[in-house]
Image (tube, rainbow, N blue to C red; front, side, top):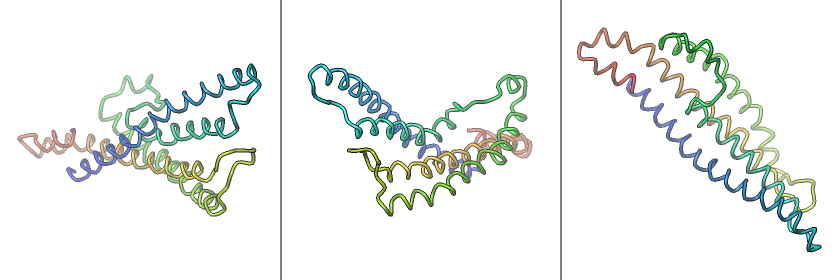
Length: 189
């Protein structure tokens, strides 16, 4: 179990590192949005366009980056929607069991399915160097590559969450077989 929990910690570290990029993208997106609004109105006043389709699309692409690269980290931080009305009444083992089943039955198949379905369009977009149809627009191929990447990160975090839920379910069994409790403590770390 120690090795599995070590893997879960490494997967957590990957999503935590990627979340740093997503966080900085929020600031860039807000700055770009502010410039687009100010540039539009200031540009009208001075008779010169200070915004462009590229800047507007840049704001959209940064939102894509925030959303898709933040999926796994949000799961890690338990920020996704949950049915807390029911879970607040349940014990830790029942919560862990539901977490494990939900991850294995719903989260992982969905994340891996979206990833699998989105790989081909992303590769096709890269092969033709797909660009925006708007004048002065940005390339679209790199933004399309974020879709399989984001859902891969979500699936990897789902694996980490499943490992922790499994360890929590096994911890009482380990505790009974180990008088010192060290294995149980390791399992719950």
